[in-house]
Image (cartoon, rainbow, N blue to C red; front, top):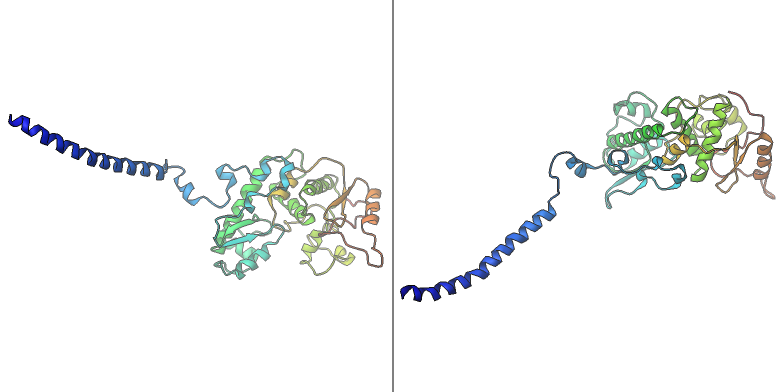
Length: 333
């Protein structure tokens, strides 16, 4: 009978305890779900550091399809290096077509950058970065970088350039007149300075590769101005006649180094020039170029696009030199 009297009491206690147990169990399950959702699937091992330290743009190491791996027709699209990194971060932008010396000056003047280099001399800087006493021109990839130490920005830009060029070189079109990837980089830098129009870059690169195969001088105005230290004002016949290692009117073959920093599109164009037979081109004055197969056609284009406007002086084509002075018979190297 005592057991019978205790049973109702035990039953009441059991019923009171059940909601508490259910509440505790729910809290435990909620905590477990939160842990599983917020915890990465891989806590350590290969790939863990990559998630934490992934660079702003590393298409070659992290599987993004870089611009030069696509068909040449895609050359006008924005490259990964031009994408803006973390919103709100201090950024440093390296523009296409600028020079290494100009980048160093901007690094030194940028308040968001710690200038930890021995000076602004490009050759000295390369040695300080552990890259040897080589010419710095063309050896940094244009793009957007997180501002920080100048040495870190330049090392990253150099690493991107090497990865981009080496990968593009492996995928180059057959039969190009280049002995090394550096030769291709030199031509890409000239293409970069000749036009800002994406669809014209492969055609301009093709003009240069055909002239190289035939032993013709490149006769590109941007190489002349670079060799003269980029003089102010329009280029003159006196400039063209002034011999420097970079003057492709007075010297055959390629200049000794690139003449500017080169973007993905220009590298793609130099290594995938378009087909055709053109040996000349001239700026139309609207940013586009007129291509010609023969000297006679080119001279006609010169008369058409460089004729003086009414009541004015002879106008200059848009952009840096466009071979508009190739009005004589092609010169062998």
